[in-house]
Image (tube, rainbow, N blue to C red; front, side, top):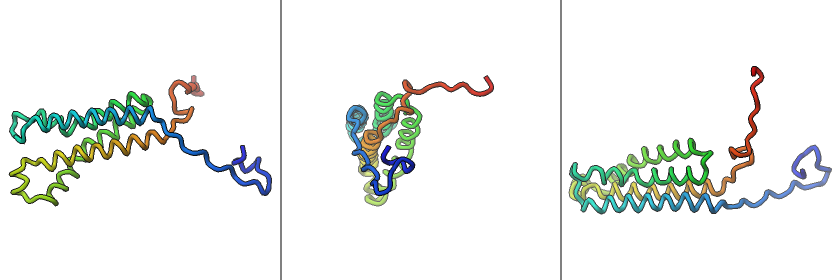
Amino acid sequence: MKNNPSTRRAGDKPAAPAPRSIDYRTAGIMLGAALLGAAWAVFNLVSTGGSRSEAELRELVWAIFATPFALFIGWTVARRFEVWRAAGICFCLYFFTPFVAARFQSLVWTEAQTAANGNSLYFWTAIVLHLIAAVGLAVWRALDQPDQEQTPSEQTVVPSPGT
């Protein structure tokens, strides 16, 4: 009530903002899922043995898809009511990271180096970028405590005027 200007007396200072608490459960679930996804991505990438033929296509797709997918699952488990936010952000992470990884590879390696190494820098860059983004997202969601109005168990249904 001290921050409400109508109840504050002259000379009163506004109350200091409360320190942000960390939701360790959300951070742990999201980071754990992302690490599992990254481990699966690394396993699939390493299992190709450097070959980039059509026989290894499934493993190479998993190398790009595993971390955002696992992060989505972890985010949904941690905060079920944020499923659409998680879906949108994880899809964007999955969709745009390959463009950034390809651009990074084109700046660092020549076409001859890229062909000789089977785009390995591209795949490793994508996995690292996914992990960096997953850590950032987990910290963001862990610091953003859901309000009582945001949690589905606390919502009240208000009938519309026409019913």
